[in-house]
Amino acid sequence: MSKSHKTALDLRSKDDLILVAGAGGFIGGSLVRYFREQGFIRLRAVDKKPLGDWYQRTPGVENLCLDLSREENCRRACEGAAEVYQLAADMGGMGFIERFRVECLRSGLINTHMVEAAWRAGVDRYFFSSSACAYNTDLQKDPKVRALKESDAYPALAERGYGWEKLLSEIFCQEYWAERGLKTFIARFHNVYGPWGTWDGGREKAPAALCRKVIQAKDEGSRRIEVWGDGTQTRSFMYIDDCLKGIDLIAHCDRLIAVPINLGSKELVSVDGLIALIEEAAGVKVERVYDPAAPRGVAGRNSDNTFIRSVFDWEPDTPLRTGLARTYAWIEQQYLDRKAGKRTVS
Image (cartoon, rainbow, N blue to C red; front, side):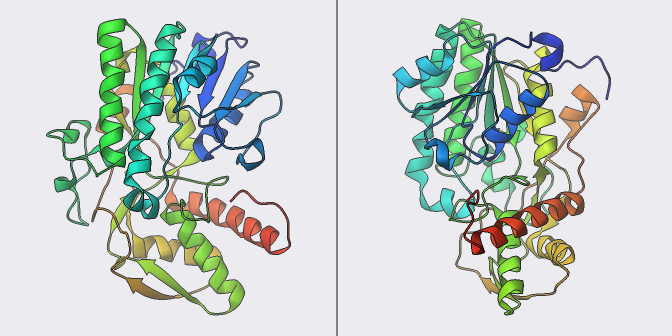
């Protein structure tokens, strides 16, 4: 990657205030830690969950418990901030976003109030975490799907609930730049996974859910797991470290002001292929019991990384096998800790 591409370290003083909204969750908590490790000393982390329920808490950070669906809380959160990273949302894996569409849609309140509060506070850069769920679902009906490029969001036919909310919030970001001059940056995430992510409780995504199921089957000696769908659905999955690097690059590239861009791996895998990699990490083979009536999402989705490569000469590139091995090991330790009565992430 060319050294000409800027990051926060190139454009910000280390005592500039950086706000991460949704910091009690997986990606937000990891992003706070990332900026702290970069040497930034004024970080504000905001989430509506009680502090004890946050996935990660980084020492030396101002932590605020605020419900950002309320306008006054967004104003408080943005006070004095130079940069805002808006990752707060009510969401989860396919099991959650198919069953709780109203909750997903209500995240629009957060995004509406946050972008307004950021503009009023004089924020210099505003990053919004969008999703590949914003893409036209008619293009995702075949497991052998062609990779989705940024223009494939239109004509619009996003996933109900979550996808439509993301698409509308992208438009808010674009109009706040066009009409009010707020530098906004939009990344469409493709299935982020890794350590410190949700792995149980109903909001977890496929890699973590399947890791947990294999760990439990191994522990209980059953060697049998339930699989949602028929195993043929395909996706690409991005490791958390690649996601954090991509966020930093995108949020500091003026070529991308108000321009949606894919942030995801291009390594396509079926659910059955994903299970095979988890079996490899676990050192076991399991029997798969398929449930075609369970939530399964679109048949196939992959990230076309032509644009991000053209901008940065870089793309998310952690091999799925490598990232899954790390993730499996972390979830297995969480599982064993919970079994021993210790506190765990989820």
